[in-house]
Image (cartoon, rainbow, N blue to C red; front, side, top):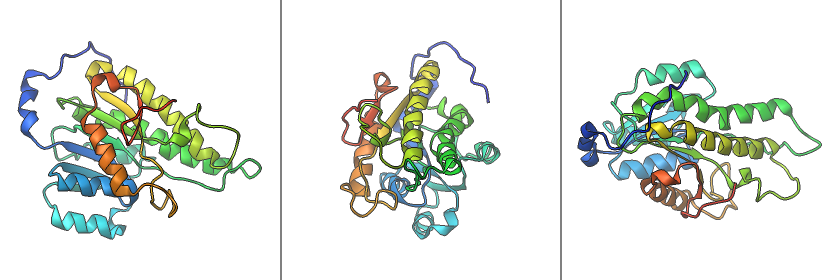
Length: 253
């Protein structure tokens, strides 16, 4: 999908004033577990509308239980962010007129990739999900985001993708490269979507105690997502193109 640039817009547009007292609409990828699931839980508690994407939502008991209790505010989509055709079909079936926040959260981690044992096929799989996934989702949902009075795109990144904070070598080549590249995607989208009034940021959730982060991680999913939601709600247009931690602190690229 080709993005057509247009002149910078003065927000909000008159017809969008009615949205201020309406529920916030979120589209979140990777919601079957971990941070994505916790986002879904906390946002539903706030009364927001959540469009939740997962590769196999039916295999997540927590997600299905949430759906049974939030039949109006939770909409589930079978979504693989590496499949452009699937994303296009979902974009045709969105049950709302606008999306206020797109949270590109879906991600994978391959711990086996260290120097000397590099698996390039697995590295490409990680890049395809972590970096290209958000790049596929954004243009597909742009028509919905452009109808919001405060559209935001949140790319869930990691401090492991910070070039300035990386010293020496180590493991997780694919994951680190994918998050560094995702940060570049954030910067480029922030410029390209400025005329739409869309705020685009990379957010670092902290070292979170999930399947990906492991049991030794320092931050609970509840604490991380609580902080991330606060950051998202307080984003200003001048924050677009930034790399921000769940605490609200800005990070170095």
